[in-house]
Image (tube, rainbow, N blue to C red; front, side):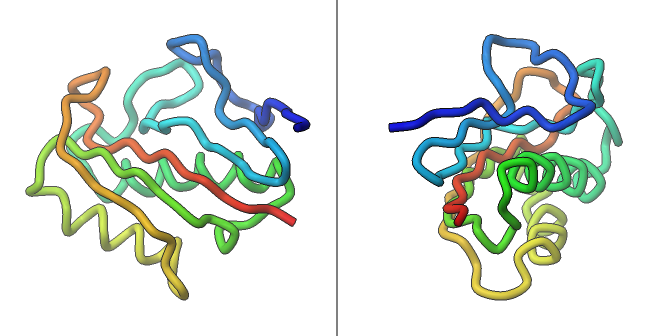
Length: 127
């Protein structure tokens, strides 16, 4: 099995020992992605739609760095801090997955920084 770290240009230093993505045998595993800027500050505090858009743009950058597109995503894990944001998250999510949807699950959790409202991890099959 070949394995390669996927780190898009402009990526900040993670707050824990991981990389944004790993590609193994044409499968891209995108780490749990939070609404962080390059200095690990939470962006768009209090705005679930804007945070979700930021997270999905980051996910997209990892997949594109690996040579894929969002159409290659087959599975997403969505973590949210409050079910009250479920509709806002789904609204933005549908923009990024307008056609055939990937499989997914969604659970309510506590995230590493209290201002973060959503975290998404993805799997994509590229090539």
